[in-house]
Length: 232
Image (cartoon, rainbow, N blue to C red; front, side):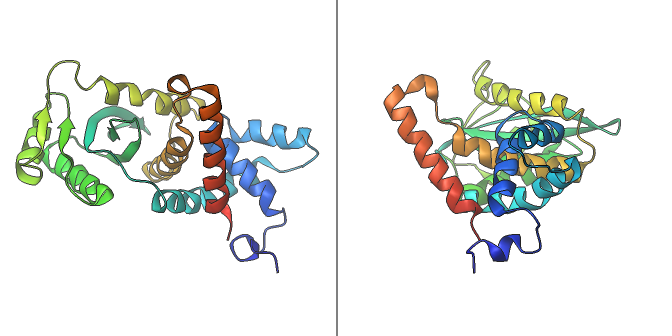
């Protein structure tokens, strides 16, 4: 029996095709229609709907495995929130990245008050399995409340421009949101962002910071980690 049979049971296409389609979708700014064409160019005829179902089903599974094997986050979190409209209703996308640009968490909420900030901070503490040494935010008062109640020992920096790293980290998501012609629902957006962030972290290799030789080695390791995450 193939080692992938359990996870991919009852799927007509080979696991390698499914894995490749899911990787393309979460790694690059591609639509399901783009992926349909890319597979067709290789002689693999897959409907757009099949590709969408694969991403919805396997994306979260792969993401959970990648997070489980993640090497861990740094001791500083840069936190920010942006407006996201879904069906004409305003929501807030909370995001935290560490000092290395790793996305620690993304979380959609209906508000950005103190209660929402504390909910997000609790998620971060659980993700990091402990309190960070430092948090960097803008001057939103909700952050101050959450800091005092949940992370009183952590340094809190809300000085001007200090949070640029978090603000810049929203750009890839904005690009994907435009490519998807906006998110269709909170559930769909959260599911996508969870999977997208895990794959982003895996291949966020800092090409401009490393020599070509070392970058190729980092990329090789990333592909090994991906292969380990997608097998049954």
